[in-house]
Image (cartoon, rainbow over all chains, first blue to last red; front, side, top):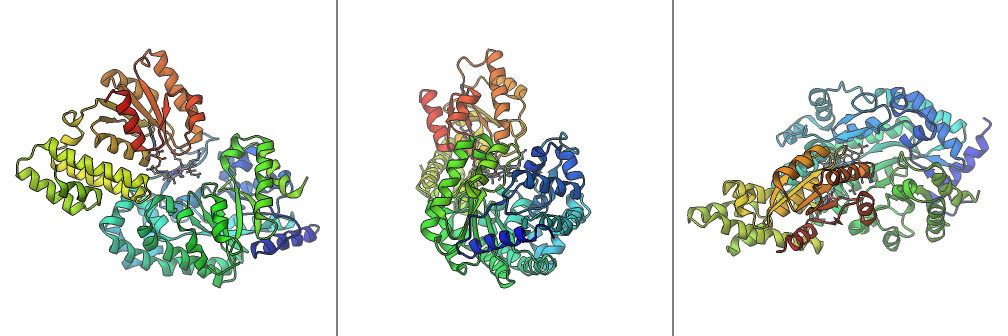
Length: 368
Length: 208
Ligand code: B12
């Protein structure tokens, strides 16, 4: 394989940083999908019509950017969000114009009595029933995406790019919140807390089982444990301690037990509860905030305990200048490196990011 | 005012709030007095939110309890009867369906003595225009959580101006990513960071 050596160097670079060591240079590990389509001049409708094609476009984009050590996604993620949030979604070329970004359309597809169903049937059967009966799906929507992934990973490896994150998982809070809608779900937490908790407890065996199955099959270096609507910013500490943290911890530890280094993909502001992350074993997970959590406050708490990844804000990549992005990234590198730090965007490179801004971010690490 | 009701509202104790409202109603306490107590409780909720004792979860629950309680009083809390300060029209701009923030603002405005007209989400410009013509509000609010919809707000505000409806009208904007720069870009009058600020600003502008 022509790029074997490059690939090995990059795996080494990323894994050294992930386990708190000092790599030869700061690794760059990106997340982007719709951006790649725009970057390569492909309409979003075409981009997601065929996942193999979408994956090719993504790889082309990463190669054109240059200096990308690893990536956190290999195929377009349009469906993924739908499934983990039990939501209907609008797609480009279907409900939307050919070049509009896919969108979650939150609707109340789950009702309070459904918690009993989760408890009785288990999580997987429940979710599948909802997708088929209420969202009008077939349960096989994810299939094309999942089956495109192995070839996409192989192609990336051959090009010398590390498919760092190989799967996404999350806790019942995210799923129920999507199915109930955020406002209704929060009311459930006050009105029927015991029922919600029972359903969450009943869900974990399936979620952990799937997590282990995913690791056994894809053997990824890392996986996402995602926190979107579970951020401290959204709920009081009392609720967070009861409905978020125990599950988040259990899932993260399950991945660690399987020998992967979970990437905690944390959107919105988690500052209040960062000290809980100290309960996770040192050097075994990555802390990846989206630009909304103050990285410097996080450093005070998690420095030396977890690798930091991030957090060039998506808005800066879209609206900022080359110099602004470069300077921000350089500052991250000098404040969070040289050990235990991976340079990355916060959350995801937005579709309207300027290519030269993304290149400026990467240049901050590669020196090119 | 009922101390019991104020505290139960502030502590989000739904059962107690509903019982207390029923009891007060049975004692023939005027609806407006009951609402005043609920509103007092809501402003304590707002303060606790600012002090980071309460979070979004508690704001949403308070809005729910307030709405349930006002149903018991026969919806008087959101009708004109309870509105001491005039009409406030609000919606989420077209192409955007985020409504949690908007709902909090409308509920808090409603519970603070404004007559609120909620236009919903994904609101086209014509709907704002029609509402301005019909209700003649002094203040309207446009909510927006997507940077990709900023141009829609801009278009909406320009059209309001073109229709000659801007003269005595203040246009507030708000929502996660909206800031001073956005405000200038879209040509709005003011950005509010949260519901409490919206109340303060509107009261001041309406000369309360
Ligand atoms: C919940 C949520 C959703 C839910 C919405 C549910 C609902 N019924 O509203 C769902 C899942 C449907 C959703 C969908 C999408 N979302 Co969304 N969503 C969020 C999230 C997590 C929270 C928003 C929220 O409710 N906040 C809580 C409320 C209380 O805060 P608020 O809205 O800011 O309101 C307060 C103040 O701002 C103010 N205020 C608000 N409006 C107004 C108006 C006036 C006039 C005034 C005076 C004050 C005021 O008062 C409120 C109370 O204090 C944010 C993340 C974030 N950090 O904001 C992303 C976020 C807004 N979403 C985002 C995106 C990209 C999307 C999608 C495009 C994703 C997708 N590809 O599917 C779709 C778009 C769908 C659409 N067409 O609108 C991005 C926007 C990025 C950007 N800057 O453009 C965000 C920032 C997430 C992120 N980090 O990427 N989302």
